Length: 187
Image 1: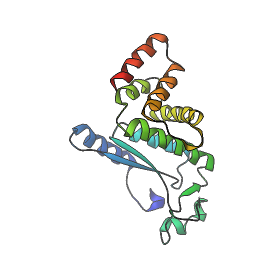
Image 2: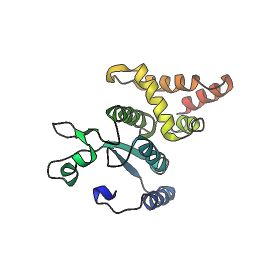
Image 3: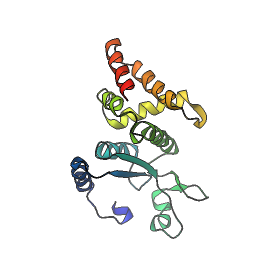
């Protein structure tokens, strides 16, 4: 935040956001930006976990270095490499490799499909209890997504349900899988 001239306390922002979300009468949409100075993959995952569950939509975005911006002027200082064409999106930094960015793009896809869509509320809530963190859940779902839908293809509605079922089948007992199947039907 300091590197981008924003003097906020992340803890205060999350606390205030959580209070607003808990009121239940305001739609909360949070954006996380990957590629900011000093934020590596592990810290981004923590930011994700901190924000998760305090909003209705969690948007993962990627730093863009627009001409004339302070960040563009300091790009070399942070090892930021971007696309040469608009929107000048970050490809890597001294803190995030290109592979890290690609992984976060996959996490972004599955967050859109399973959290932001609002279609899988009960199923996702159930699966959250089996992972160390929300980020870990979406990371693992993302790996399965990439294996099942290579080259950027997207599943249809039934394919999304199948992906969740297959993911759950990889570690749930038969009884737990039966319960999970009922949640998928409910969703």
